[in-house]
Image 1 (cartoon, protein in one colour):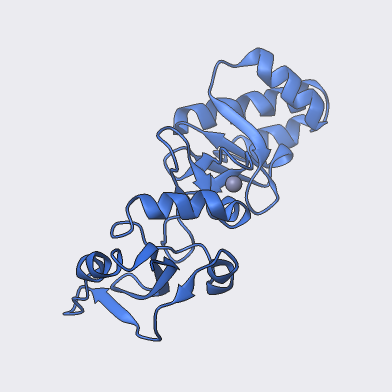
Image 2 (cartoon, protein in one colour):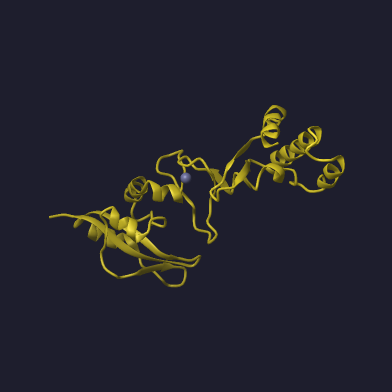
Length: 207
Ligand SMILES: [Zn+2]
């Protein structure tokens, strides 16, 4: 059924949509706009009916819902302002995690990668962080992964930056440490909407 619907859908609509796995492993659709979604949804309904995958009664009932037919071929759908296709794993990926943390990074202009790919290709993510250490906080790699890539915690000291008087800044720490170490990464240990706690990791002590 899905193959038939997709084939006929491709021929029947000029809308933008993607049909592929999302980062939860389920089949999903990505749309650019509500109009595209509605048009694709009604087209799927027509195809299902024309191929007798659903009855006329079923079709008429489901017509009342804005997106019911999409769920015949997909488990979820997204709009392009809330999800993107990762250039690494090619999955539809929500831009923000459940706790509102950003769920992507852009190692080069025009490329966008997800947090799973940051872990899988940690070297790429580390290089991205090292380009602008004071602006780019490590939120994807665990301390264990950092250690595997040669980083050590400078100390157990945790810093805090936030909206209510937590004013630690990475800049003075970085400018002091960069004379002593090749690489400095600020590693988030706790992220909330109002404050971020972080630790300092270093690599390559200069002699
Ligand atoms: Zn990815």
